[in-house]
Length: 213
Image (cartoon, rainbow, N blue to C red; front, side):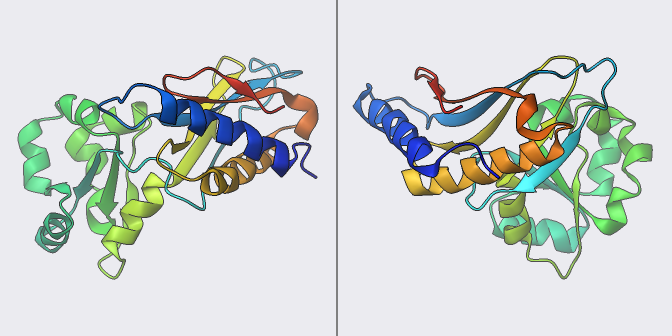
């Protein structure tokens, strides 16, 4: 059972949006992040968890996506105004690491994804950007939207986590749906559930933190 009340979270989200609306105009859309502090957890000894979940609303619309596939996939990607690369394009890179820095996330055809370790080496995996697979029958636009709406909770060596749950261009209700699902999913990954949550904060890029737990 969730230990945060939707009404309270909605109030804090509305405050974040109000503050953003009254700030001076910025030349980018501020991201709203869910920041988590864990407690009673020892990353050295306890099992490190990792999990991804698709949120109800796209949380990162500006995520820079690259499609990896054959000519048919590249044509589809161009139709969606997406960057795309073929296996020949990847061979020319000669395992150059610039690719992982240029894009936030990758989606790759099922046929090409098997060749990536040979073509690119371990770079994508090391950067935490190994592609999401798709097939010719998949709706590419929907697949990219799924990627932009997916968040990953991954415990490393520190007890603080942060994921983008939306942006200031969204409504409070859209953000609320994302926050509630993300929080309850995270709790399901934890060894002792809510007993491992030390604090939950929501914060826009330029705004102050708002505690929700």
